[in-house]
Structures are given as C-alpha cells and as structure tokens.
Amino acid sequence: MTISPASASRRDFLKVSGALGLAAGLAATLAACGGSQKPTGTGTGADPSKINKDGTITAGISYELGTTGYDPMITSAALTIAANWHTLEGLTELHPATREVYAALGAELPKKVDDTTYEVTLRDGAKFSDGTAVTTDDVVFSFERVLEPTNKSTYLQFLQFVAKVEAKDATTVTIKLNYPFSLVAERLSVVKIVPKAVVEADAKAFDLMPTGSGPYKMTDNSAASQNIVFERNDHYNGPHPALAKTMTWKIMPDDTTRTNAMTSSKVQAIDAVPAANLKQMKAPVTVAAQQGFSLLFAMFNHSTFSDPKARQAVMYALDYVKICETGMSGLATPATCFVQDGHPAFKQAKTVYSYDAARAKSLLSEAGVTSLSLLCTNHGWFSSARPIIKENLEALGVSVAYDERKSADAYQLIDGSQGPWDVLIAPGDPSVFGNDADLLMRWWYGTDLWTETRMHWKGSESYTAIQALLDEAVRLEGEAQVAKWQEIFDKLSEDVPLYPIFHRKTPTAYDSQTLSGFKPIALTGLSFVDVGSTTA
Image (cartoon, rainbow, N blue to C red; front, side, top):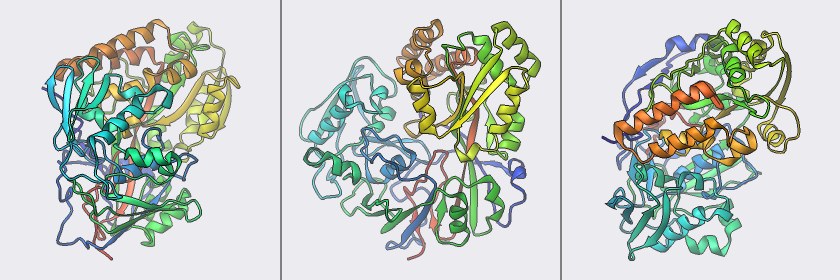
C-alpha cells in the first residue's frame, strides 16, 4: 500500500455565521468535518450554475511583495509560491486544498518502466500563456536548471533521487533515477515547467512576470499599485481551468487594514486573520481555522547546546497549554510529533514534551547551563506567545539574554556568526513544497544551510543516524516506509536538534456568498484553484 498526501487528514474548520465571541474562546468552537475531496475538472465544490464566467475574484494578502521574483527555480516566499499555483504547472501538482497529487502537464501520473525509470507524456495541446506549445525540450530545460548545482535552486534538495530527465520523443520525457524512490509522482511537482525560449531570452524579465501554462496569467505585480493582477489563460486546457475572468490580490500586510477590507466587502477573502479581529467577522463572512503542518519551532545552536539534556530542558520549560490557548488564542496545537496529528504519517512520538519546570531545571543543571541567549523572530501572528516563552525560560533560574529581530535579520546574525545565540524561536512551513514526511524532514535536517551553517549539528552522531534513516526510508513503500518515518520522529523527539513547539491552525476568512468552491487551506497563502465568483 502506498500513502499519498491525500489519504487523509481530517480537517478542522471553524464556521462562523454571526458575531464571534472573544477570540480566546475560539478553540472550543472548532469542529472537525469531512475528509479530503478529489479535485475535478469543474472545480472542487464550485457550483457552475452560480459562477459568473466573466466574474472577478478579489483577495487581501498579508505578505508583502519581496525583493525576489517569481522564478519557480528559486522562489520560496509564501506570496510568490501562492501566485505560482495559479500561473505555472509541473508535470504533476499537489492540489493546494486537498494535497492530492494529480497529473497536470502530464497526461497521466508518471508511468513506472522499471525501478529507476519513469515516463511522462505531455498533455495533448498544452500551451503556455503566450500561445506557444509546451514541448519536451521545455520540460528537460526546466529540470536541468533546477538540477544544476550552480543555479542554487531551492528545490534541488528535494530531487536528489533524479539522475537526469531527457526527451524520449516529441511528446514523452524519460526520468532516470539514481535509486528506487517511492514518491516520484508527489515530488516531481516541485519543478514547474517554464518556456525555454522565454527564460533564455530574458531571465530577469521572466522572474518578474513569469510565463506559464497554468489556468491564469499574471498581468501586473507592481510595488507601486500594491496589487497582483491575473487574467484567465485562454490557452489553458488542463484539469483545473480558471473559473473567473480576472483576479486581483491586494497586498495588505497591516492586520487592521486587511480585516476592514474583509468586513466592508472590499475583498472576498483574506489570509492570516488576526485572532484579535475574529470577533469582527459576521455573516456572510465565514472563518475557517484549518490545522496544518505549519509550525513554530525551537532551533538549537549545537556549538553551545551540544548536550541533548540542555535542549530537552528548553522543551520541558515551555507551558504549551498557555502558549497555544492564551498566546495563540486556540489557533495552535501542542506538538506531540514532528508532524501534526492528522498527517498520514503521524504517530505520537516516543518523547512528548509538556510543561515540567522542575525537570527542566534539573536537566539544565546536569548539562551545566547557567545562561542562555534567546533569539526570536518578530512575526506578528505569534507576538502574544513570545512573552510566555521568554517568561518560561527566565523562570528556570538562569540568565536569559533576549533578542527579537525581523526574520531576515535573525538569520543574518546566525548565518554570519554575528552574535551569540543558543535558541532560536521561529516559524516554518515547508509543506508549501509538498506533504510527504521525507520532504518535510529534509527541509531542516537534510541540508547544509540548516544542519551545518545554522544548527552546527552536521557531523554529530545523531545527525549521521538521522541521515541514514532518511535514506533508508525513501527506498521503502507503504506501511514499512511510514513505520521508518515514525522511527525517525521518535529519535528527533529525543535529540531535538530543531523541534516543533506547536503546529498552527491557519485562519482564513472568505465571503461564502460571492465565492463558489472556495476551500480554506492549511498552507500559508490563499488558493483560488477551482474557485469561481458569483459577482461581476
């Protein structure tokens, strides 16, 4: 039996029809509902009779336009990845809402020829938004640019199993593997197919305004307008066509501005609903808080916290109930495993951390720790949790030096060894790239940036053991593979090189009357795949 990202997980929804009570009471109103739905060519739940085919979708987005562009070879920003869901395609894709893998530019999911050979035939008549045909040369080019180490692609780390991709003929590509790999269909989705001629002609222009084969095409993303504008790609002939003629994302990083835009019907959906503003939402606005992998983690500097007892002490020092219920207004669940409860590979880890100040003090004493430098990123959505974490660690009776910085500045300090730090508290969500446990773990535990430059963990006994287990797991399938991942989860819970404090529920607000087929997602960002507008 193979386990797919769609197998699975029950999803937590908060349905609000009328004024909400205090945000702190949010957790008590969460209700579980339904399993995952399979994507279809007419939308995931959209009602064709209600959709205005010439309608417009308008959304408020919490993330600012960054300094990097949209090139799918390198981008990892939440905003650009979400935009690319709508304009670009891989041979396969993971539906943003269901996380089910489906054939996108491929006519079918990859066909296994032998243990290390797969073939994919392109969708008949597939074209880019400029009207040019998608060719096997484009596919080979797209993979080669990601696989070329000098290009420093964000996605190379997820493709170590790929030896090469080559054109078999005008319609089919052959994918040769370095070793048998059980997650080919899911993992190929990280490579978006781009037009070779357009990229080679002007890579910078492509980065700013990508040409793709997705259901929409981007027409504006200027910082001056603070809007990202999309139009239906009339050349698209795939399984998830655009159900609106145009779509505009308004960049609204300010919580109050974004909330006011939603409550005044200036937008039809917003992401990152602030817990403090939840009570402002009234019908027809629906708020959904969907449990996902997205987490807040503690990362340790192994140069100073090399003793696992010191790392375990920090984990036992945290009041998880207070952090999640008070600091996060119920929009978080204490971690009991590396992955969240509901993930296909979830099993409660061997070590589950709970608030135990006495044990934390004892472990710190055994490790000889008398002071620690605590570094936190300043992301607004966990601003009320930071004081609790700081207070928990100060209560251990050791000297705590606290530093709070923007995310980029925090990592600049760490990467450049510009200052002391022992513990970093920061968010992360590699599930935007994929949902399988191997990918989620390798994001932090398999690359030199995290393991060597940041954690200084590479080369340790536990690092070596984790790498061996990861490499063993990817060669397995089904229940044996899941069991091996769970063995890794157990070891991570004891070694805690970097470990989740909680998994987050992602709050989204949307107008259920003017959007048809909208599905809140557990990822950062918004998805309008398979969504239509009922208004002009």
